Amino acid sequence: MRFDDIRGILRYVPQFRQRIFVIALDGAVMRQPNLPSLLQDIAVLQSLNIEIVLIFGARAQITDLAALRGLKPSSVDGMGLTDDATLEVSIEAITRQTSELVADLTALELPVAVSNALAVHPAGVIDGQDLQHTGRIERVDAETLLALLKADIIPVLPPLGYDGRGATLRLNSDSVAAEVAMAIGAAKIIFVSETPLTDEKGNRVAQLSVADARELSRRKEGGHDINLLSKLKYGALACQEGVPRVHIVDGTQDEVLLAEIFSNEGVGTMVHADHYQQIRSATPADVPHLISMMQQSVDDAALLPRTRKQIAERINDFFLLDLDGNPVGSVAVHSHNLDGKSGTMAELACLYVRRSHKNQGYGRRLVAYAEEVARQRGAESIFALSTQAFRFFEEQMGYTVSSSDILPASRRAAYDKSGRNSKVLLKGLK
Image 1 (tube, rainbow, N blue to C red):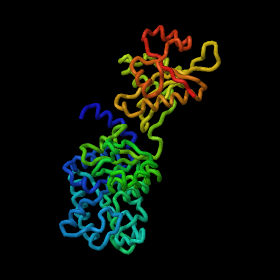
Image 2 (cartoon, rainbow, N blue to C red; image 1 turned 180 degrees about the vertical axis):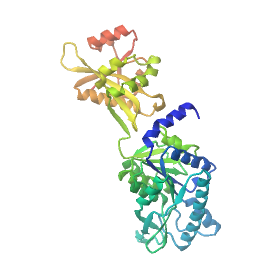
Image 3 (tube, rainbow, N blue to C red; image 1 turned 120 degrees about the horizontal axis):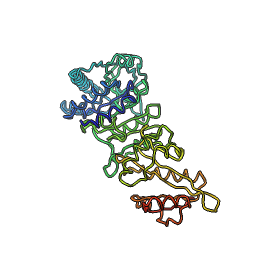
Image 4 (cartoon, rainbow, N blue to C red; image 1 turned 45 degrees about the horizontal axis):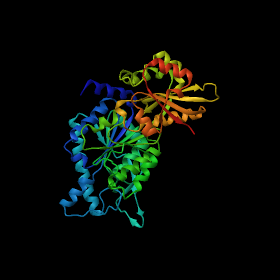
């Protein structure tokens, strides 16, 4: 690990310290060769004073054991019908899996406790079918789970529950993760899936709103298996009920937990309930961020150098794009009086996006935001001066190359004095 990697992680530690993460492992992930590395990541999180609740699924294990017994299970995901034979196989597979997981965590010197903190009841009759031994969670014993976390013990919850009559019921692990996270005020649910969530072209879906996740979970034609649809369904529910972030990551990747948590963009899919991406007005406290972010572009002659004093004096013209509270982009909107005419012309300046976040649409969003600010300030047109990004303004944002003659007199004088010979790009605002 490079020192830059360590610094990147440490930047997030104050934000996550003493926060609760619910981590849900797919059964198939627990058979991957990288499981020891995944569990080591969990140990790292706990060492950083992040409180972990661990939940696991068992679809793969139940399927394999049923095949070994020559049995066709009535369902394997804890959502459909669970008949007598399937329940028997499920209990055996999950019990064995629980023992193996506790042994692996103990080998890492992690204190764990298998908890029966779920009060459940039979799911009953759904769409005319009695689901028999399939359960639904009635209540989560949050007090017990929080007491374990306070004692630095990781609660482990298998996808089984017990009703008031002592009957064992099969549960869906994704629903367990959602219900537990909502009950104990978790900051995140991280679904470690056997497959990633991708679009039609096979590209990673980086983020989804609650509404988008819910809509996608209802689609059957999108090519996603029921495993991912379940995570989207319960992830959207958890976000709607107060869990700030839900992540779906590919458990076959190495170091996937750390990569997802300790970076702005992550490596998986994030479902968010609030404004994950936010463009806000800059404040005097942001001046060091603005200078730091723009320095590389200044060095590359893409941006005009600005002193701390110059930025501070016009701080009300600057806006920052935050990702989860971290500034990754900026733009400024300056107003200029028209020569001998009423009205104003706006200037879009200081457009910048960190290199690690380029080609993700943030530049377009910042420009669109700046244009709206200019409209609200009464400007009839907006211009930008660019030495290197003029193609972006022309081809993606609808600007046209113009002459420096269109610049207000005060701005024209500064333009001529700079000697940068920047392209002048103009756009009308309607």
